[in-house]
Image 1 (cartoon, rainbow, N blue to C red):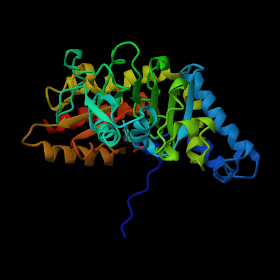
Image 2: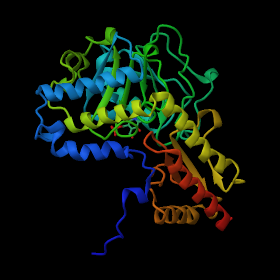
Image 3: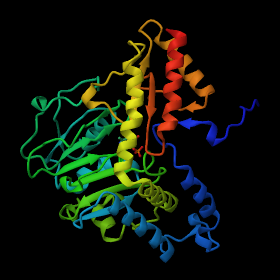
Length: 374
Ligand SMILES: Cc1ncc(COP(=O)(O)O)c(C=O)c1O
């Protein structure tokens, strides 16, 4: 079998949408911890989840997260399994009592669409926004249709596939239980947790590897789980036992804790926010000054700072140019830039572990490619 030439991590930039790049420092420490955690002679994956050592790993991880986004005392942090997709079902099963209840769903892309579909198995879903097959914006408030009696209001802060991000917390009125999927922009800007009933995020984009999902929930919403909710998705049970009902993905919890400490060392979420602005502006600027050679379909006030989908060339030569773009980018070590199969084109994911100098390699390439092809 033909072997590809070997590459070192420092020769490449990984623009994957998730699982995604992890900070190098975290991986270097993880190598050691995998074999021998803190000189115990036992690798971190070999520690019992019932041991005092793992208890410390879990509690330090939660403590760091609490500090990073100032989680108020009346919120619990759960570390669960089942991914973001697990939460799509967990939410209606924990926040509503019967299939007659209604929840409002903002659908702005693939992930909120999937979540609304899953919720329809358990409750009535009111689609707040006009239905569309093109997700290119968060429509203006004048187009929102909210239900006064909704048990909760759901939105996805950043749509990973379509690159649509809410510029700020949607104003859905006083007293509503706001539920948010922050899987792909978690910790890329400050979060006012007190505005939410529930926030959830899979770790594998900005804060770790796959296997753990963070759920931040206001305490008064706990204790209302439906009787037929699978116990693994039961917030009441998991909150009562520090998310240790069954064997957690201990490795993913360890990595999450290490990435959170790394974020803290970098200057916290405000530093991540500044980096996100710098990185995304670099890419937006090349697109804007390309005279249409590059095209970003998302409306300016809704374009994501972390997933930038764009097209190359015109309708006639797009397929060929995009294939060449990906091929040449890859030969320069700029990897995993292919857009999601449902939208095509290119997608640059600019998560926290990517630095502006990594993104500069992409923008330099984009300019050179345009000069050569236009
Ligand atoms: C915004 C968002 N929500 C939910 C999910 C689903 O997460 P999981 O694959 O962990 O179930 C994804 C996956 O990429 C996502 O990007």
